[in-house]
Image (cartoon, rainbow, N blue to C red; front, top):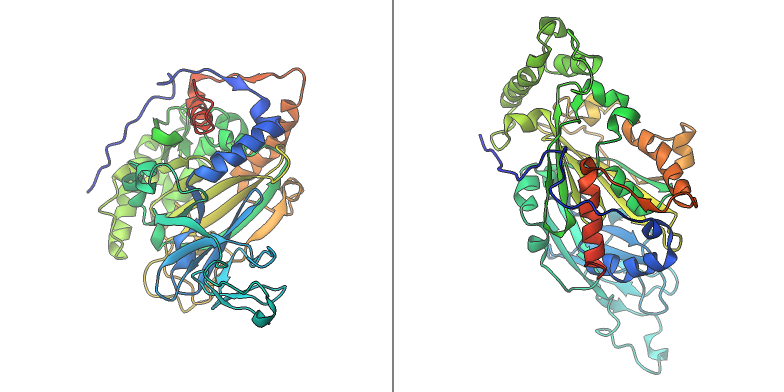
Amino acid sequence: MASIDVRTHSPDRSPIAISNFSKERYVSSEWMATETATIWAKSWLVAGVSCDLRNPGQFITFDIGTQSVIVARGGDGHLRAMHNACTHRGTRLVTESAGTLRKFVCPYHAWVYGLDGALESVPGAARFSNGVPKSDLALRPVEVEEALGLVFVRLEPDGPSLAEFLGPLLEMVGTYWIDLMDVTNDQTVSHLCNWKAIIDNFAELYHVPFLHPIHRRMFECATAPISLFDHGHTAVYVEGGVTDSGFPTADVPSDMQAMQLKAFGLDPVDFHGRVSEIRPALQAAKRALADSQGLDYACFSDAQLTDVWQFNLFPNVILSVTPESAWLMRSRPDPGDPGKSMLDMITLVRFHGEESREASADSDDRIGTHFRLNGPRPVDYVRPVRDVFTHEDILAGRKTMTVTIDEDISLLGRVQQGMASRGFEAVWLSDEECRVQHFHDALESSMGLGN
């Protein structure tokens, strides 16, 4: 059984200086313009997931601010990225978030580009008195690499390599086999807050006992250790199968613990008066069930079988992983308003075994969570189309991104409203929020604003 040696810190005392910072970074158009020229142009950015690009002809699009990038798998198997703009008169070539094509055809004047971005044909080429230099008019390339089951792009190819940028996360996240997972949900919500307010929210657990009561009954957030990495990345390691130590421990399993026990064939009644034994019992039962179903869990520690590890990848990705599933959340700025943003959420699961002959049903048993193994891929599995909606849709109950994320979204708009108040000047952080501080330190450094 493998065990990863991670550099962890207690959440009670920050390993870095807490310096706080002005609210201008959340509300200023000038600050936003500097981010566009630095963070979004020069950072490695997660454009999508590798499972969307397994086969020749598959493509994804990635929009960041005013820029749009196409990433496609060519017939030669190579992955390429290019700006999503026809070199004739600038028309955006593709508007779908993912799909399969043999060529990219401009809808305006039918210029045709190959999956490698090469300009292949131009209607009426003889009528261009300046000629049609196809090599010069190929789609403009963008740097692209794959790692961790994710697809990364960088608009300006300067700075650290992707391997240098990710560092120890290559091993720590790589063990989760995200490249073997499939998308089961793809959502984007437009939000009335700055993109950094979303990142801040997922960089601390200080708010969890007050905003997310369901977590008290299934996770230990109060003492969850953290890691701070170079280049602004952070991690938190949250124990599952337990209850929050900030509250009295009951003599019987909570409703959430009981659900976990039943999912692995254990009787909650057997743990009356033995609640502290639930986590190791879940770990043993899960490993035994995985072995019986031919899943290799040798590379996972017992802790990883019950716990949720969350990695924040600088600048704008939150990756929450378990051996069976992952949440990829990505915060993106509005093209023109610092008080608006988009939050993408892609749910991935790892199917295993022979393809199911039964059609899938709308149940947790089919989509999978870290409470259970996912089983075979349903015969009717289709990669879902991205569902785009507003934060008002969530507040009204028309859409959901899970109970927890909905609760976060319900308050983040109010955070942005408060930022505009004359009564608020600067963020004031606790040691428990040092992951927020670490992110903003890296932000300032990347923008050339460091001390």
